Amino acid sequence: MGGSGSKSRGFWPFSGSGSVDDAAKDGDEQSMARVRSFPGATPFVFTRRSSLFFDEDGDLAHEFYEETIVTKNGHKKAKLKRVLRNLTPQGIIKLDHPCIHVDFPVVICEA
Image (cartoon, rainbow, N blue to C red; front, side, top):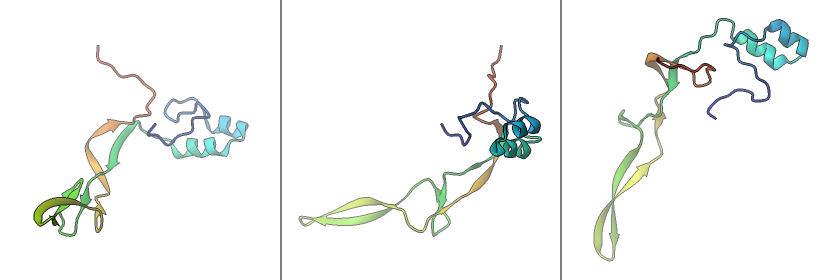
């Protein structure tokens, strides 16, 4: 849920279990690639993808709406129409404080 890892094996690069030699013995290239890509990995997350968008005017928001006038049976009525075009995602933003990765396999509690 929300992760991009393999559920077929119990491999976690932060746990210290498993090494390049273990992965080479198994012949699993994917595990070897994971071990090599996390040599000094940290359980902290420093950036995240933003859910905000910029519109044509440079305004920043989650959703944009425009007011439209609808005439029905001779009555004018104002409705809000959601804008889905010409929006640019904000992209990757830096977090103020690092967070712990959701897949970090340690229970953290305060006694």
